[in-house]
Image (tube, rainbow, N blue to C red):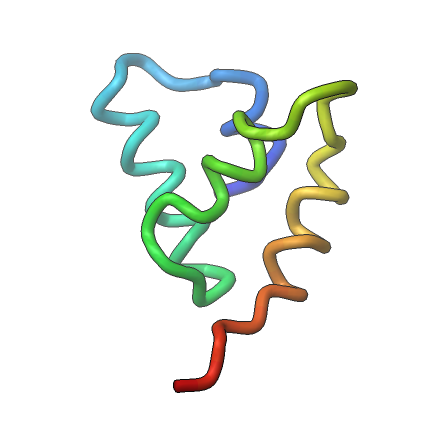
Length: 64
């Protein structure tokens, strides 16, 4: 599974899109929805796949 595939919307239906994004979250060890927020959320120019992955692996949850 790649960030590029998710960003290119290279899937058959919405269920597959959810699976792709959840797989990316698991692959980088992030909470559900984290990678999709990186892809869909920012205003301005669309991030590259490399930028999405870099940002995802830099994530550090708040200490409690």
